[in-house]
Length: 119
Image 1 (cartoon, rainbow, N blue to C red):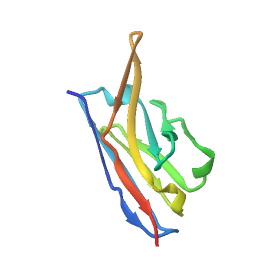
Image 2 (cartoon, rainbow, N blue to C red):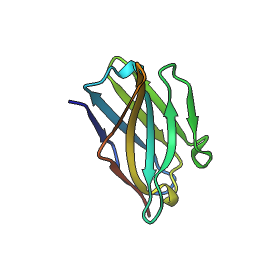
Image 3 (cartoon, rainbow, N blue to C red):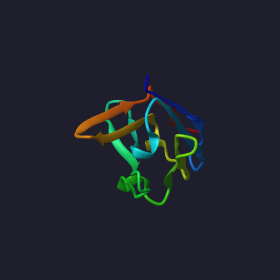
């Protein structure tokens, strides 16, 4: 059974920091591109950051220079270090794992963790 379990969300003041974690099980983690997505109230889900199996990372423009995605293949875990948080970062953040395994797209999601940036 595949599981992606996010943790680390919470309430933080503007300018603060949080580190999200996504622990996975049931997949061969090192094969997967891992991503963090978010959905703010009234908005569509958007990609925040993604890291490939080769550790190539990309970010949406609004978080560049503030967020860092990383992965620990030994722990089957992906992280999102968020700094200089802004109220507009408030959203449910979701972990995603995707891989093309012998021509079949495997795509899994976590349940989400709430990040609220407010004074």
